[in-house]
View 1 (cartoon, chains in turn brown, purple):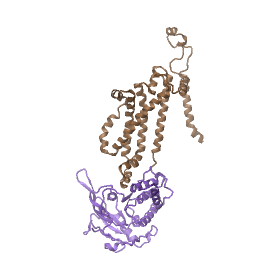
View 2 (tube, chains in turn blue, brown):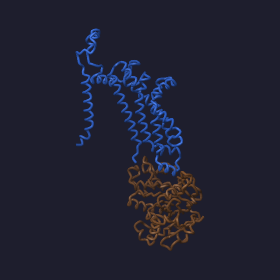
View 3 (cartoon, chains in turn green, cyan):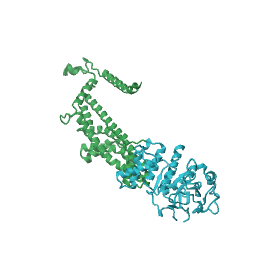
View 4 (tube, one colour):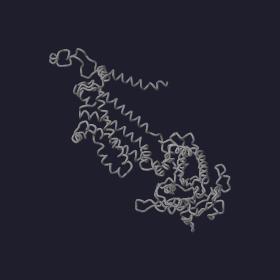
Length: 280
Length: 307
């Protein structure tokens, strides 16, 4: 019966996927010969163009063909409006990582300071409370005006959205390091730096990593919207561009790619979290 | 040896209440600990036992009074005074060896790897943890964790060990074994130790002197019981010693009733700077010199609480 436990969930997943594809296929099945446009218009453009399926929504097979095309040739570059999905994803990932790492460089040291001192905590708290709920995209016009560069502005938006969860979690993790571990460090006359790196950082690491995992998730959500705004490159721009091209199959491919990359980012952060987590 | 290693002079702990008055947990606490001596402090919860230990450790400031170690007033925590915490306080992200090595490097940062390893191994062997060096605290039993805590404290070769009910979270069997080991280690290393407990038998087994504290608030040292049992005592033969029951009865009697009544009916000649020394089993309160228990060391230690 062990087989059922092991294979049950994956089999069910596959069954769900097949059911979904079947419903999708049934809903978008091409009804050949049916006129779907105005009779006058049909005369104008010819029967071939006027017949076809009811809507432009593609069938699973069409999306599959498009997907296969993206997978087999992800890095082509035919000018600014026609780049492979791999190139677009690479642009997005690069922006997210730069903004995210900058945010980590700022948030973790400041979070450390805030967590160490209740006074600094209280002093920073009102600012954090006001700035945290601001939608990162609201910063975009301000960023475009001050930074004068759409690419840098997108990175700034990623920075500003991923800084808060890391800052708050670092401060919380540092502030809630167990008193007894700090007392051990005190009785051993451990210096400030050594205490920070050997006691407080490992003790707060799981909480900090949780914040980093939340941040990467938010950053990946935001990059799509940011790139739709700033345009040029990136997976968000790709999706928007395909909307202008009215290529629903490409949009679906883009959405799928966004989901997969997001999952990989989250999983890698989860893996890192497990590395620094200690059993009590 | 006219001055004890540790001298506590009139320490007090007060907390400011909301209405501006202050409540006193304990005050006017005076006592001394000689080199190589094992002193236990017994009292009910709330009499400030842990606070006294934290003040000795330098983790908490006293509201009043001074603590001298080797003639010098203490300022904050120091590697001279190692603490064994009730909750073992091991760092869960380090191995047993790592925890001890962390303490040893704090004491001797200049040591090379080989020297550090040898030193740590010596103390791991001393507490019978050989083979468990690579394990993390989560993989160790409660008793083994506390052994690591003991090894960590001993490995920095402190002038004194401070123990805050180190065995209270352990089961009876493990507790007994660890008590015997602490007894053995303290005898081997001539370690000066101060321990808080509320286990009467633990105090009789381990301590040379047992300080009895009255109930808080305004707790004070009621008296200091000198343990007249030979230092070669063990857990199995303890109850066969002739003075065992008089001492035990005296302690239990104190905890059950006298700790409450003491504050109300202070003896006329009570002097907090010089609490009475008693040796139950011998006749009543004895002069300080006669109360010294037989000790396996060459130097006779004079119990001197007068300064």
